[in-house]
Length: 214
Ligand code: ADP
Ligand code: AMP
Image (cartoon, rainbow, N blue to C red; front, side, top):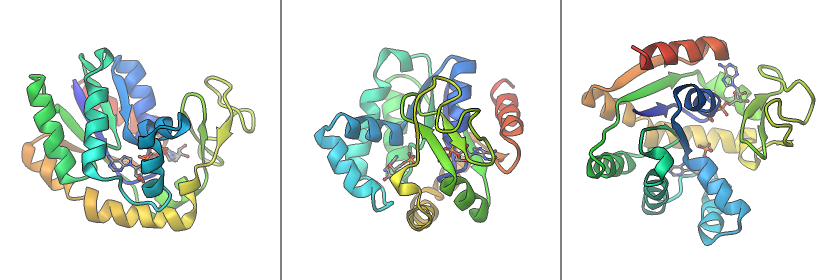
């Protein structure tokens, strides 16, 4: 099963993908995490990506597509994956369709998580992420049990440089211009399901699971 979580920055894709991947035994493929891993390792790709990420704009399609295709070719993705943050442009969506077709596979469901702009900004500016396992916390909606430490692995929590209000606003504009057209793209393909993302984390999860386990 190949599932894509579609939604603006802060919609809760990472939070839900983390749990869904474990519950459904699927790989979690998050393009933003792949770029940040590359940056941590000091690769050329990581440094290139940083110059775009810092400005809140998208990394060029060619580079992003090559990175995700390489990830999808790994053994843990052969039975399926939860895609989080990819595709983000029509060109990426077409490339993904082609790549899956070559593997004799296809996207089964695209779950579009809808959250208002005001709530997205509130979520991004209060977000804390685990350096070790990438679990996402929020200073008021999902506070860690112990300040500064991940509930799941004890790793150190940090705030992303691109989660400032200014860069978050830029990322939302980029989402509306370049990524929102995917709602029509997948609607026409007949795989899109809308999810109300403005509910408690557990309720969003149960809506997602009820679609995927149908
Ligand atoms: P995305 O991966 O879509 O950018 P995240 O999953 O990292 O978003 O969530 C953004 C922030 O919002 C995090 O701080 C997370 O803890 C919080 N969050 C996620 N889902 C909800 C929700 N349903 N209600 C309130 N806060 C949420
Ligand atoms: P995210 O972790 O999904 O919020 O992504 C953080 C940043 O990484 C984005 O603002 C982009 O600069 C870059 N990025 C992540 N995924 C993609 C993608 N599919 N296409 C282009 N850029 C991406």
